[in-house]
Image (tube, rainbow, N blue to C red; front, side):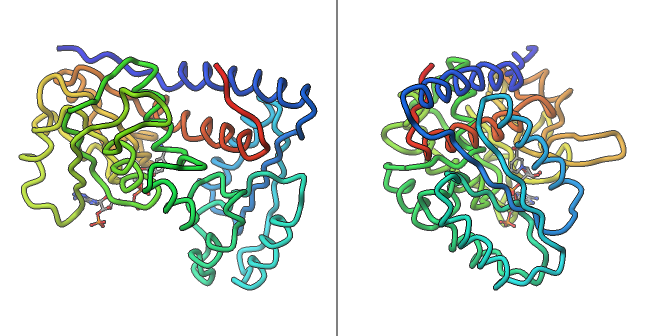
Length: 293
Ligand code: NAP
């Protein structure tokens, strides 16, 4: 079997075109231009790239973006003050504090301080609570992007066994929540899965991954998922972004797993493209707009 490539680049372009039209319609109807403020503390090179990509994407779709750079030695209190000002700014509809933050900053206090109505990453406990009750205001960007890939590639996961590797707050846990829910804000085919959430203490991981109809890998280890861990015909979503001497690779051994899976996302050019795109969609929604295809 040679897996179908689920091309995140093409899907992201399609959705960004929809966002661009939706932003224009929202503004033409008298709505405010959606505004996204990114806060970057220190000089982490990977964060610089992520923030730059987000700013470029904002520009493409007509969202006003601003970048606020704060020094590496910024304290928790200083950053709290800064976030407070962005909360009060009516031209800002989305606030993005780029992670990771320097060690001296209490990241949880910062994320808790973002106005939940402007929390376009969907990390605030209030928004996590809404998500877990199936009435999310903002879907977290990476899991949302994965649902968009599944929906737009007509992959039906109803009644299927979804195995998720990784239980982070930003990918694994919300992914498990969304896939296991009764209804989906994205498509009726993207919910009602039976979900197994795995982590570093999971015993005999390959025996579980081999049961997966859908495998979502968010572990942060280059080529961690091998062909032997895949049930023939499974759909494999690779969230990992791992920097190696040979460039960026995912959590999945792409070449080997492509020979066993029925469909797979590449890295780069897969989930990452959608993460940025769904941030734009959340900013539009936060400004009172609606994403229409
Ligand atoms: P994270 O916070 O680093 O957590 C990694 C998870 O993997 C943890 O739950 C950990 O288990 C689990 N894990 C580690 N080693 C394992 C093993 N040997 N067996 C089973 N599970 C294991 O992860 P994250 O923030 O979700 O990121 C994961 C990857 O996705 C990274 O490469 C990151 O760069 C990438 N990422 C990509 C995007 C995108 O847009 N494409 C977005 C976000 C993240 P424990 O909980 O037990 O420690």
